Length: 201
Image 1 (cartoon, rainbow, N blue to C red):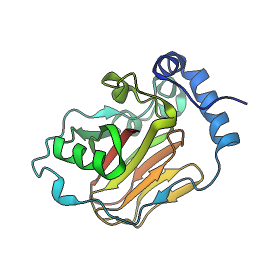
Image 2: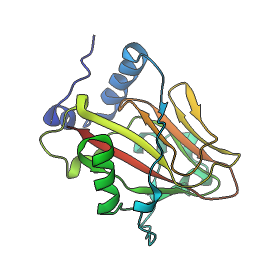
Image 3: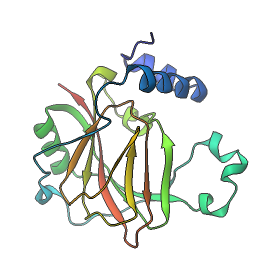
Image 4: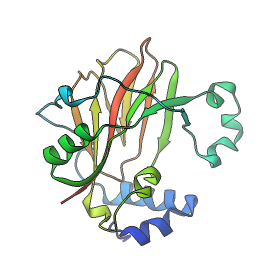
């Protein structure tokens, strides 16, 4: 069976081929995944560590180049589908490092506007890898999602065969690094969350 432990060099090589990468992730999720698709943590996130002056940068597209080439994604609704992203502050990253015993953490804030969604996908960890140390190993890779706004009807975070809804600000979920996921916001309000990627000590 496919090994699920990859070091930095192996991961960088693997993600060069999108088709091979997706096939491998499908195998890992279908055959090696055991237990829940996500876990809601009991202790909430301390919202006081956040910087109130959040400046969102340019939006980024939510569909792969391969998806965009298909007829299914030819409608304008997909071409205009974006998520806003803001860099997390040092205080938040230090809090997350201490809270989850992480040696390295990347924690950008994402905002999803009404009417937008992210198609189901596996993360390549491209942004994370740009500044990632050689210490990287998928066995140490940790994933968390921190809710910053109150849940509204029409908002959902899908992980594997499950869906997470009805959250409150400060709620945290943890999920495996290989978990396929997608998000949707069909409510009337923007939804914010912290997308946490880290390496365990």
